[in-house]
Image 1 (tube, rainbow, N blue to C red):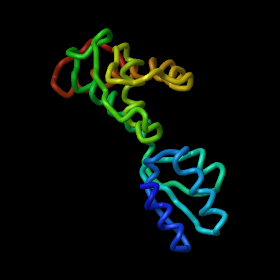
Image 2: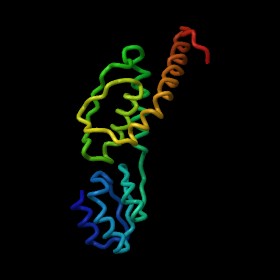
Image 3: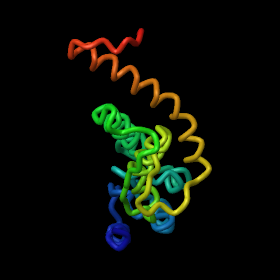
Amino acid sequence: MVTRFRDMIGQKPDGIAMMGHPGDAALMPLAEEATAAGIKVSYMNVDVPEVRAKTGTGFVGAPLCKQGQALAVKAIRVAGDTLKPGDTAIVMSRWEAGNRAQREQGLADALEAFGMTVTGGRHGRSRRAHHRIEEHRQTLWQRRGADRRVDDRSQGRDSGAVG
């Protein structure tokens, strides 16, 4: 993808739209080259925030981390009582890909916020990720309770919870 980006810059187009999968470090030198040449660049699917901040380029795509968090909330809700704090989840990704692994990082963070142990090859967690876990811990518990109350009522059961 980096080689293709280099080739596209060499063709001197007015603009380039590409995926940000290679990440900030791999794309930065070429993004700077494209900007210096007056080529507008926009990234899709995987954000490269450092590149965008330095070069003023654009991004179109879903918030991957939030998608992962939403997946965790849904999995916890669907699993019901079969998934509980203390259980272990395996979340696999290309962790070394940084920005590309944001969805999986969001999933892992949210499962940990729920109280699960997450394995799958992550090599450490950033301080920012640790704060996200603490921020989402209470929200996940609240959502799980609300979802269970709604599900119980829709199936004619009363969970005894008020709300």
